Length: 175
Image (cartoon, rainbow, N blue to C red; front, side, top):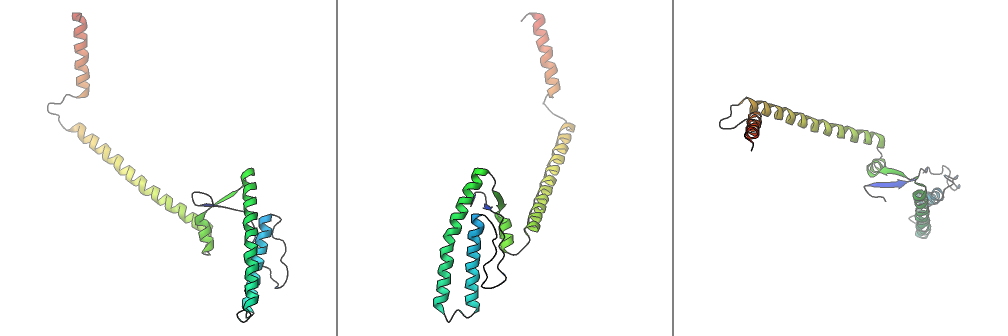
């Protein structure tokens, strides 16, 4: 698992064999693909035992479950070696966790990402609307501020003119 809700995955097909009792064709030439084939095959074997009335033959299903459990460390080791190779080659594929959740729920991850982008666009539109309102408010307040008469307050322009005149008068006096 990587930080910020992202997982590293390899592109491996996970199709099951179509003929029971037949060894599936090689999914991949990579160690992860081979280990994944083994795990999927063991899960399929467990399904076959259960569908054939495996409840009556508990020893057989326990044996198949043990085979499945023995294949899981091979998958972890293959994933670790592939991850290390990906890190060295900078070739890892990063997927957001939300996309994996959508796949897990049986939904289209592309549609989920499009919906997420549309939600971001909606949030941006709301923010832009607020920004436009504040800009209009600022402009209106500035306009009102300039039109109101000032009592006892010297305008900035008048202050600059008077300070310039005082400075010129001091220069003429020599001081």
